[in-house]
Image: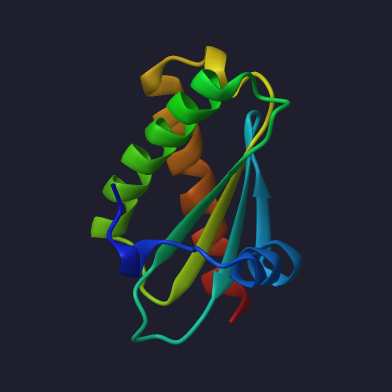
Length: 117
């Protein structure tokens, strides 16, 4: 589990990240990055709708995305809210494919965010 300081929890925080954040699409997920204060910790939130599957499948997808988020916390910029929206079909991916897709999408989004500032 991610520490409370590293989680996007409130609905208005999700809304701001999705509406005003930089969007990066991959084949099975959409990542939204919203920069906040530099000293603030990076936070992750996950949107896994019923279109992905039944509750067991959604929870498994969410657990896998949280595991990837824990790895991304280590060497990534601080002060960013990251919301990952899972798309249908993400549950069929093996671990390595999912990990590579989300990590590369995150890296591309960070590069674009840094280049635009």
